[in-house]
Image 1: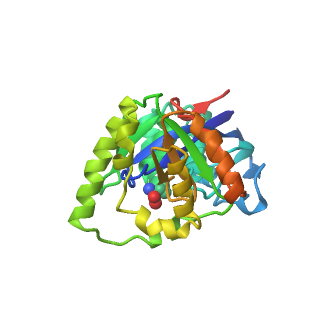
Image 2: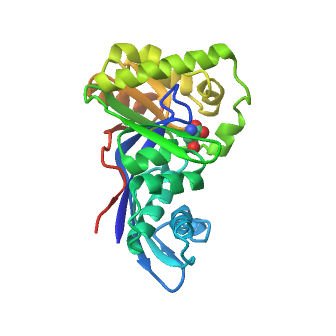
Length: 292
Ligand code: HSE
């Protein structure tokens, strides 16, 4: 049985650990009953019991009170870049969770899968769009319960992912964050995050420059992304309404009013940052799906 799970960008500027959008950029993974754990189609270092697709799979068996049986996992396509802030870990966990539900005919809802997968990942902000698709805002309370709401996304805004050739581990990107923030920074983020949801809903590019500003994580993380300031200058001078770090990075995400931005930005990046990929990313509105 094959599952397809979308990439996602968490945070979106001020929505730190809360907002996420799913993209039409997918991993496709096949799962089948097997007498032993078999993992194919990925680098050797991931062919073991720590594989996140396997952990996602096991998490559902555990939640259902079933024995932890092995499984065969074949990675058919892995278009989501690894450790680039595009939700590759969540996509694997969600793929495994969805596959276990279907292989064992458990009939779990997407909301139930979200709760289980978020517990494995630790944050719901990538897992929610990976499962549900679209734009989501999520909380995980002290007891680990997840509440997620979905928002509509205007098609007037376009998104471009700038993907560097270097990885950035979430662990490192979280280690540079302060444990406490000022009231002014908290207020700035709450108010801008609220504006951002409206800007994305109605496609108001004029709101984006103010709405995408973050004070909780980006000021600390941008130093981990060599070239950040120059890339931002290029993006804004080429017509982006705003740019933010996708998830914990290293990918940067630009928001623009027209699709024409991507081609111009690709040329500018090819001249100064030739090792970065510049790709348009289109929201996925379906979320994780079983293909057969
Ligand atoms: N919200 C998370 C972060 C996403 O920015 O650290 C990566 O798990």
